[in-house]
Image (cartoon, rainbow, N blue to C red; front, top):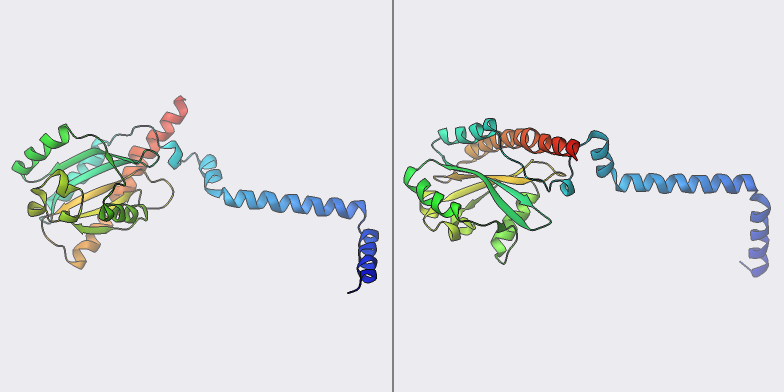
Length: 226
């Protein structure tokens, strides 16, 4: 295309572009930008409309109700499950804190109690590659079962791998968007595939109820008092 043709084309465009059409094009462009911004921030907008706490808002402490503790302890009525643990996570501070735990074996429970009584909040991600991979799996809402000897529990409780050789974890809640922590169950032996599927179903139920009852409701109450 020659220069003369380009100039002629631009002249035709200027003649065709009236003020009304220019205004409509500007309005259309603004509308598209607003739609794009709304789509990019859809999670935040949804949370504001339905008053759901976001990850950034989960900086207040939350506690487990008696109903949740009962549900967790009832898991140990199964021979396979020897212990339960609920961990609160602060992603901004890279910190995890024990909120509740229970162990079936009385002697081991006593030893664990002595350690937990002096245990400071631990790092969620540290220099241990295996631990970091496990935590990423939790953040990705995977129901992951691991040998206890490959977890941080082996460092904190050296006798645990012999008594409870496997641990399984699931995020609270078990879906993306409002990560508040995770539940851990300790197993007395390696579970079968059918046992793992049953445990996952039950743990998912408890995790959702824990979040809705103990975390989300606490967030709504905190928000109203601020």
